[in-house]
Length: 166
Image (tube, rainbow, N blue to C red; front, side, top):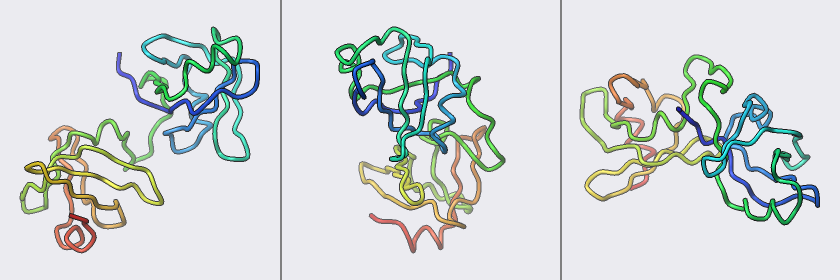
């Protein structure tokens, strides 16, 4: 089973076992595409789904009948099967596929390994080399190529040097 982390439970919502979820998808509605979601490897069917005015998703899952049951899920990750995920447009990738790639320049200089991606106004990549962390925003032009088969993230050295935070 190939799963993607699609969200995190923030807190219970109301008295009927609904969960407030911070989604890790481009659009909160994408979570509805998953037939089954998993929390701690336990499968749950989505019974209800809505997006609040705050941009968070509110999800009702079969097997979570009330607030007391929902409270136990606070802080847990929500996963879904990759095959249920919405189709990606060309040039889009799942974060889980980028983490672990070698970050290199077009000339082949190894800058480090991608260890984390934080979604802000633009995604901020964290790479590590020899125990040192380097952060850089994935702004236009810096990432030249994502080579999943070759396990490489190719970046423009000039732009990288201007924006990287050591």
